Length: 460
Image (cartoon, rainbow, N blue to C red):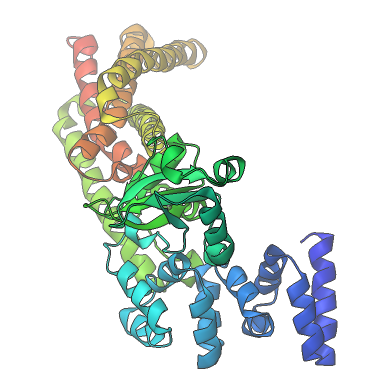
C-alpha cells in the first residue's frame, strides 16, 4: 500500500471509533472513487457500511468498479431499501453486467427491487443472448432529431445531459427512431445556432448490432478512435450505446479466459480463491484426463519401436530430449498464434503466410537445436568415449531428428489454432499442453524413423 492509502485507512478507523455518522459520510464523499474502492479492498469487514454511508450516486460509482466477489458480498449485507437505492442508481449496463453473474433465483428477487422503468430496461438487456453487445449497451444517451437546430440541440442537452452516460457524442434519429448519424459535441458548439442537424451530418458512422458478439465490439473499438458507438437492431432502430469502458472490461475478461485455456484448463469464470474446490477440480480434471490419454499414445509408440530400442539402447537415452524439444517448439508457436489472433494481428486468411513463416522458423530453430545435439554427441564421446565407433551415425540421428521434430512442432503449433478457428472452435483450446502432447507422439515416430535411416545395418 502507498502512503496515501495508509493515511486514509487511519483517518477512517478514527472516524469509525468515534461513531460519527455525519463525519464518516462527509469523509467518504470527499474521497476519489478509486480511493474508496481501495478502502473496501483493505477493510472488507466494513464494505457494506462504507457503501451505506456514501451518497447513492457516489456509492454506485464505487460499486461498479469493485470485483464481483465484493459486489456480491455488499448486496448480501445491505438492507433491502439500500440495495434498491443502489441498483436503481447503477447505470443500466453496469447493473446488467452484475446481474448476469448471479443465480437466476437471486436475479428475480433483485429485479423486484427496481423501479418499473429500470426493471423494464434491465429485463430488456438481459433478454439479449449472453456475450452479445445487447448485454453491454446502455439506454442513457442523447438522441436528437435530424431537423432540429443547434439551439434546440443545446437546449435538449442542458435538460437531459445529466442522465446520459456520455455527451461527447450526440446521436441523430429520424421520426421513426431509426439511426441516421452521430456528431461530436464540439461540432454542435462550433456551428451556427440556426443551422439544422441535417446540414452538418456526413453519414460516416459506425454502428454495432445488438446481437453481435462482444468480441466484435472489442475489435471495432480497437480499429476506430471512438469513446462510444451506437447499437441498432436489424431494422436500424437506435437501441442504445456501448462505451469504451465496458468494452475494456470485456477485453480483460476475454484475456483472462484465454490465458486459462492456454494453460490447459477450462475458463474459471470466477475468482480463483472464491471458486469451490469441487468446481475447480471439475474445471481442471477434464483437460488433464484428455492430455493423459494423449500421452498414453506415447507409450504405445514406444512399444511399437521396442525392437529398435532393444537393439540400440542408446536411442532411449535421447527420447526425453527429442520429445521435449518438439513440445517446446509447438507450445511456443501455438501461444504466439493464439495471442496474435486474440489481438486481431492475424486472421484465417493469413494462414498461408503464417505457414511459410513458421516453415522458415522451424528450419532455423530446428537447425540450431540439431547442431547443438550433434555437437553434444560428438563432444560427449570425445570426453567419455560413450558411443565408440558409432558416434557419427548417432550424432546425425540426433541432429536430424531434432530438426524434424522441432519443424513439425512449429508447424503443428501454428496451424492447429487456425484449424480450430476455421471449424468454429475457440483457438485458445489448442493450448500449449495439448500441442505438446500431440507433438510428443509424432516426435517419437520422426525420431525412430530417422534412427532407422542412419543406423540401419549398424545398430538396427
